[in-house]
Amino acid sequence: MSSNNNQIDNKITTKNLVTINKADIPSGGMKSYKQNDDSIILITRDEDEFFAFDGKCPHVGADLGDGIRCGDRVVCPWHHGSFNSRDGTLLEPVAMRGLTQYKLTDEGDTLSVDTSAKMDKHVENDQLIDTHTLIVGGGGSGFMTANQLRHTGYGGKITIISADDTAPYNRPLLSKAFLAGKMDESKLILGGPEWAKRNNIDLHLNKTVSKILPNERSIVIQNDSGNSETHTADFLVVATGAQPKVPPFKGADAKGVYTLRSMDDAKAIKEASTGKNVVIVGTGFIGMEAASALSQAGESAAITVVARGARVMSNIVSEAVSNALINMHEDNGVRFAFGAGVDAINTDNDAVSGVTLSDGSTIDADIVILGTGVAPRTDVLDDVNDPDGVQVDENLQLRDGVYALGDIAKATNQMGRMRIEHWRVALQHGIVTAGAILGDDEVNSLEERIPFFWTAQYGNSLRYSGHAATPDNNILLGRPNDLDYIEYYFDDEGEDTRASAASTLGRDKELAAFSELLRRGHAPTRAQINNGFDIIAQAHALS
Picture 1 (cartoon, rainbow, N blue to C red):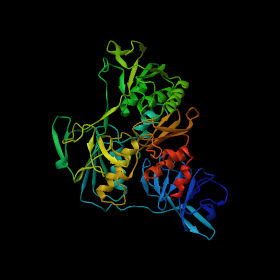
Picture 2: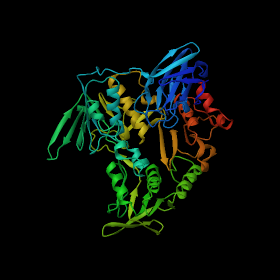
Picture 3: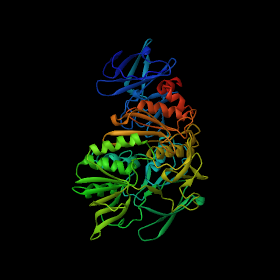
Picture 4: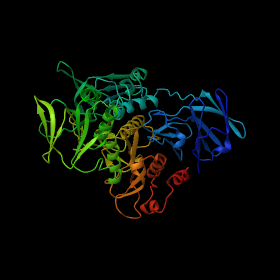
């Protein structure tokens, strides 16, 4: 049994020294202590052993004491970054590094934590020093592979080839924060502006890979003169990502039609939407986040979302949760046109002037944003063995020494074989691939991991863990309209069927507990949830 409540009492603080009572922390548990300078100390305990860490998640600063301790894992309540409870090692993203660990002194009934005495966790890059790892793609999975390799001992050469004109950046924040004017471009760069230089990584931008030859572990790059050059490596990592789907309706190529995938896309939309009537096609993540961001930015004249169905995010959440999201958007001035698809984008002098729907109605529009899905970029990869991605093993390996990951990978996780276009999954792929290259048996394979994602709209984060084919076999607890619910999803109506996924607004600790139970094969059944199953207590019991 563990306790995770924050507290300021039962400790004595001097400038860098904090004294904590041992009795505050049960074995198998953890507790965080907020300091007067806004820092947080996290203490974990196993029998008579205690460990001290910086208690803020290195991702965006969540108090880890509000999360879950389950077995040897500390799980962040917000985005489920997970860390080893004894040494702070990163086990799961979206955090990209482990926890800072402090030295502590056992003084009988108390512990003294010296926050100025950080444990030295420097890793020598002395493994595979005569090898070369070549990474195609500067997105999340490519970045995480390189970053993890350098932080876990890889001493060979690392090269990243990217078609982007920008160093690797946090793509999900384009629609979550940048478009809303809440985050500057410089804050999106992964690892900071000097990341590649600090980690001795050769980063090549604006490079077009025309062909990938997995059997030869080679790529062909076409230069500006049209000439080609071939590069071969010991390890080839293919992370070419996905590209937006553009429906074949009339006017889709008009001036003022945008997709949102890159930094350049976001900048163009930001500039073009000022004072304009915006129509967004699609009610998935991109569509809903773009509507939220532009509404928060407050620069558009009008925002209308078009959808064939009557729900938003209909393949993810139930009708009740969908309605709550619709209400949230409508309260912020967003309009919806449900029940009709786009028949054509109307133009005037080749520029967008409106949208005609399949029911014959029209909507005034100056710009149109297409949130109509993406397709994996596999056209340059020879011998792809699946039209919906590249089938790889549990370590993302396609051939000996060749890995395909991120949005192009159809890989087996704990929920089955699937291709998942989510940031956390892409970062998981990078961790798994780096571990496979280094031959590190302690790094969990993808089969031992579960998917997780979140969407941020108007400052609220809807989080989702696991995978369900449909949201309709569900149990809803709480009040979605009050942004306080957790919803469990099942593959069928059976009482003994275990939940395969869950989503929440406002019940983050419960979702973190569910994620750990799901990962360990102990997800609750329909009958257990209906009978008042205490999911947090059960996760604690596993510690």
